[in-house]
Amino acid sequence: MLRRKPQAAAPTEAAAADDLKKWASQIRKGSLEMCLLGVLADEARYGFEIVQNLGTSDGLAISEGTLYPLLNRLQNEGLIEANWQESPSGPPRKYYSLTPSGRDAFVRMREEWRRHAGAVEAILARSERSGNVAPRA
Amino acid sequence: MVSQRPDVDRYLQELAKGLSPLPPAEREDILREWSGHIEDLVTSGESPETVLARLGKPAEVAAAMVEERLITVDRRRSPREITQIVLRAAVGPFIGGVLGFLALMASNQVFLYAHWVRERHVPPSTLAWLGLTMLPALLEIALPTALLFVGLLGIPSLARTLSVPLFRRLLPPVAKAILAAGLGLSGLCFVFQDHVVAAANRETVRLQSQILDPTVERPPFSPQEMSLAEARQAFEDWRQRQLHATDRPNPFGWADHDRTWRYDISLKVALPLMCLALAALGTALGFVLAGRQPMRAPLRTGLGIVATFGTYVTLVLSRTLAINGVMRPELAAWSPVIVLLAVTGLIAGVGLLRQPREGSHAEA
Image (cartoon, rainbow over all chains, first blue to last red; front, side):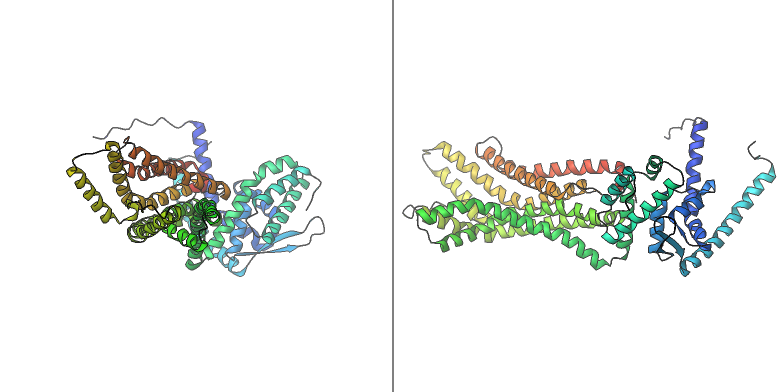
């Protein structure tokens, strides 16, 4: 005999904000690799530059603890390569750049992302047009 | 790489310590990159304290880097390489356990033999042969001890050298292999005991009684010098003789003899299973003590020695309790194995309960 579940209380504002943060971080994790490859696509950059670059857009801010292991992994997978270069102002820096296979992977990721984002956007636009779910004031 | 800031230097020093499993070239590379990055952050206006706080604890950062590299290296390893690593982790403790135990027992005899050479002029060749005849009986205890050390030392050393995903994948087959070895060696010990050990013990007693007093007749055979079937038969015969004896001049002697023989005969079946029990204990302990920062090897070796000593104490205690009539001899013979298995179950239970909270094993 199944026990009826008690009705869950409506989520508090704080809990809702917490859930939103968790979901947002999941989304960010999904696109991080592609954004990193994208940042390196036009020019070679070193760690500090990459953190700054990604940090300019609020949703992509990344910590060093996440960045460097990821750079390591992409290096091991052959998608990026690193060179130490002397710098006139300050210590030598390790510059990361895309390899040909990295460039290839990035292009394919970009296509797939656009396709996926297009489908998602269609659903979102429809929900706004219908008028039942108004954007937040 | 040395900046003018002591707290940054301290951070980099701790980071270097955490990166010690990596090869020097890679370590230097990471440290250079990080010190440059910290320099840039400080130059851009943030205070060193804020920067270091945001980067996270150096031990954790280093652990993430080491784990990353281990995952990469492990992905490139061939199955043959992995098997070699596992075997190397197991064989060392096994041989060390056997030799260590034998050396310990041999040191016991060395002084006695030296005394015999001097006082009784026993030729060293006889003593060498005597030592050799004691070997099979000692091996019967040395093998379980070795299996204990295989689990206790081998499993955590694997946890240190392999990445977490690979270690978690290998742990079940490795544990099963150690337990299978325990079971197999138990069977081997049982057969070994019946034939080789019994004969060797007969020779040992013969030589010892010859050395100590050649005039006195050799003492009667004990169960340790017979096979299981022979011992049971001899015991039955003795009991039959006692039933038909008209007088029993020494009732206490009779009871002692009765209990001793019952204990020793039961032990012939229980003792080989110590291989399995100690293999299980070693596996459980190794599993519980494994982690990114496992208990250091000398401490674990000490723990193994304590466990071995504890096992020895339970054996001696059970024999005493049996002969003095406190415990049923058959139960007493089995009690060391039962105690060991109970302790193993307890440790394994605690280990399994702890697992979800431990970060190093919870991650996939």
